[in-house]
Amino acid sequence: MNRSFIYSLKVWLLMVIIAPLLHLVLSWFIIENPEISLIAEIQKDYIIFADMVLLLTIPFAFVFWGAVYSLSKKREPFYVKQVLTIAILIITMLPFFELLFEKKVSAVSSIAVIIFPYSITGIAGIWLHKLESPEPEEETVEEQE
Image 1 (cartoon, helix red, strand yellow):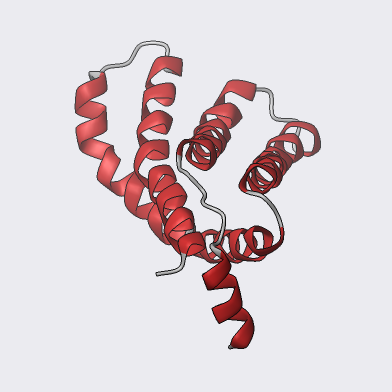
Image 2 (cartoon, rainbow, N blue to C red; image 1 turned 45 degrees about the vertical axis):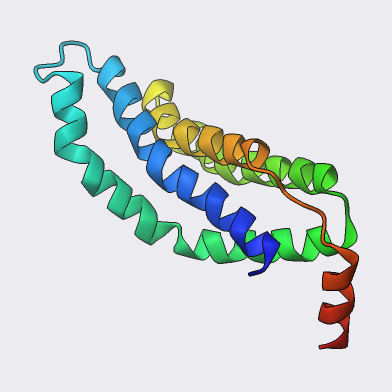
């Protein structure tokens, strides 16, 4: 199977699994007087959040895979990881700044709880998983097709 596909799948699944959990934990800490325990909150809402993230990020997964595939054919893995990190930061920070400045939202923490878990887990996934350089055999096979 294509190495860039496996890498992209690992990064995306880490984001789908961990980001909703971080989102719930951060939102629980921001609530002034939480009436429900953190464990109960996670048990109640985690599956719903994970399902929503799974469905909503499928287009991101395909775009991410395409980016990894095209970049890894021409560049070294370290460079690819740097470019992907910058791209995720830009993609996740644009809505943050748009909500902050355009909509005049006063609660920065409520926006941060929504956006930061996804950017943090996406970047962590990029750097935690190993992106291997394509082997010379794979390059010649792909060029022939």
